[in-house]
Length: 101
Ligand code: FES
Image (cartoon, rainbow, N blue to C red; front, side, top):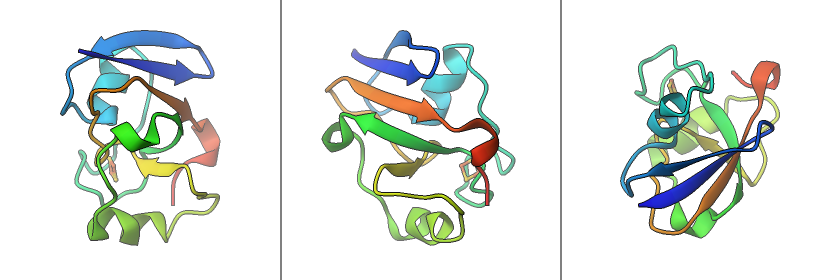
């Protein structure tokens, strides 16, 4: 088990390594839009990974292409449906209305 902290609420949950950030965030009861159902198409699940970036799966070409279409991306940006948790604790920030492409 690893720990996921979700900002801005500060909610912390336990999650299995290999779980996508999207699944873990939804399991926590937080809201995150996933229009494409987690297929790296809609860009709506854009989050910032604030801490533990090394513990999250690397960005693949598909995700990179979608991130490129989103306004407001930065070095912390990930698609929550594509980023899988590793074994170290991770902190993410939900972007609300800022999210989406
Ligand atoms: S849910 Fe659509 S890109 Fe992640």
